[in-house]
Length: 265
Image 1 (cartoon, rainbow, N blue to C red):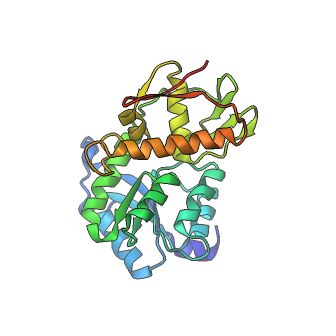
Image 2 (cartoon, one colour):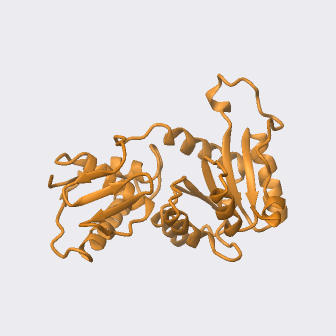
Image 3 (cartoon, rainbow, N blue to C red):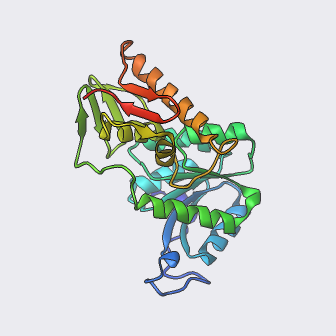
């Protein structure tokens, strides 16, 4: 870990103002965040306020410092990213994290509130996208939802690598292979394939797929069933990636208005 990086990392505090010491209260469970933000004043202010909400925050000015810290053994529950960062942007940092085998949940905290940026972030594998204008109390609630959800996986947990016919999944590094060729799935796409393949032959609802993309209860999209559009778009991208390697790929089957299944053993 470089000297410059150390200067920008807030060590995990043993306690924070406003944090209750009763460990039996689940709502007060300390969550470790790795926060990347290039605005020094804003980074310090948000880190302090998150500390008041019971979080432990290690802060970094850019993504390269974060990568160095993770390589040096930094432990975190969630990565919180700004979009505009020096050296490497937040949106480009996400796939780099995945290539390095880092599958931690990623949340964007950004002033780019337009839907096009939110869609891009979610497509790249982020679990949430929070407008800076929403304030730290809302951010804290959403981070806790993600932390709680991550401890309650909706899909089965397999020991080691997972084979399903010509498909090989490596959950430890979130990589998927078809006939030994890397499909280059994003983290979100990997989670969808993992969910479908682990329920081979059975249909998985749109809602269940969407929950695994984000977390249970996440709401986005237009209208009551707007999330289905996001699911269909993700499935289309996944199919196209498989077909780029195998033009005859047809394992993902759709049941109209219900969901999808991995159709072959």
